Image: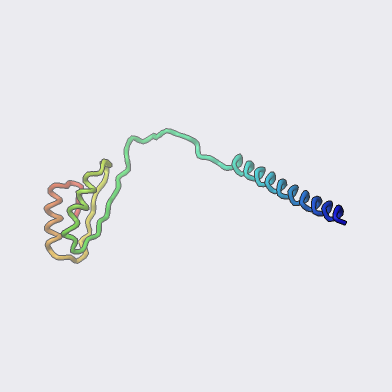
Amino acid sequence: MVDIALDVFNYIFTVILIGVFLTWISLIFSMYKSFTRTPYLDKFGNTSKEIPKVSIILPARNEEKFIGNCLESFVRQDYTNYEIITVDDSSDEILGRLLRNMQKKVKRLFP
């Protein structure tokens, strides 16, 4: 009786292992098909020597304390083709004067 139970257990265990093995084989095969059929972009060199222009839009409302550091961090960037557009959102006149003064230093600033 014990021999029959052991044989049945071995048979069931073998069937389970074969099923797991076949599952892994089908998974590997479908991954291979997926990778070989995936379209790729052609490699090409950079045809344009011109870098695109970036517009930085900076909304500000009563930001007199922080706007100077913010604009200086933009100016310190190594990217050269950009413009800074500040939007004064109904703040005090102090911010407007500060931005106009900074425009004299930063030519890419448009208050």
